[in-house]
View: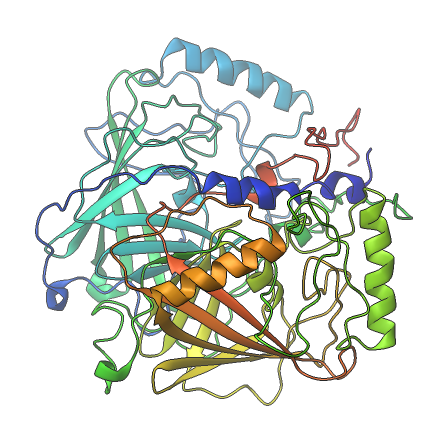
Length: 283
Length: 294
């Protein structure tokens, strides 16, 4: 393997890339519907609120909707900490809502993973998971609610998702990892509409691909007297699914301070295999 | 991947009611909201006296070469051991090689490195907390307002930051920044120790003064960004920085950072997807193994 030092000594250019990327023109966002008064806005954020999910790494199915991908019964899933060798997720490709091209891609990937390939996950690779994939992270998530914007901060690698409030989508959203999200409050619910997602992410932990036509709608609200939060998700990608489908994720409230979880320095947790490192610097 | 949730009683404040409306004396608190940007790396020099380490490498135009940090290691604020470290790193840079820093290692940017390297910042103010969101690799800093540093501090990448307002100025005090092989103040590899103490003082300044300060700095450090200034905003934001480290510095190091309100949209810049070589512009292949090593 290349040394870690070599492989990681390449990111300095990022600074120039980052600076140069600021050249992109500002999208004109006309003012949208009038904002809901702050007094009635649901509070997802105050008093050190953090949200974690006890639901594992799958979407909850919604009755009447095409269902989420599930594990192939022929290859039972074993998660971490269950006292047995963990496995990767292998999708049951009999799901009738999936277009054939996606099944073909996933079949090839599943076969390779079953043959020993390391399955891709965004967390392993320090990459953004996109929408709706990031909701399958366990958390903790932190919300920041300002009059013009909502941020959803994921403690892991401190990823940030941004939702602009009370504005329409721009005419030509730039493709990005978390897409272009606009939102507004409807009573006790934060409604978020996301387009402009790049096709580098997966919809779920089964590595279900999608196209850049992916359109995700979320409705976030507190439940159980604020002890928990639920997001109802509608996922529409006419090139990947035969019809839009719905799913749910639920989160449990905790109080805490955001810790530092640095993806690049974590080399000890996944199967105890390590980021390759050279014994001596190669410069 | 590791997951950790501290159950300390420290709280992040709600921003539900906007940036300042929760504050008792909200009328006196400056509004730093929105996106701020600059187009050059490095800490800015102060008007007189010793200041930050500067770049000896110049472009034909006479400005600093932002792609090649070769330091003036004879800066009087550097103790001899710090000067020697900076000299060695400059020699690497002169040879076209890269030494590790938080940026090229996809690590969190501690203060004061974060000020020297980040070109964009967004500030969210609430009664109990200030949240700084930096553009590159989406780095987050959280400042607890009107709080004290804990008596027993566990060093962390970004340290422990507490803040308060002094009239029109936000004052942030940071200690407890952990050290390691990328513990550097700036792109020149100026080292810091566990004794690092950083004080930030933010205040709004006249937009013309901000423009002039940025122009001066770009002439010195070289322009790299293309941040578009928001013409409707008549204020700039200036950070007066004091960096103390009695292990490596002969005296507190003063510096400035000047931002202007920008209309440029926020950009996603995940560090992990950038595989571009710093000097050559070539793409470095991601390391791969012939077979899994587990």
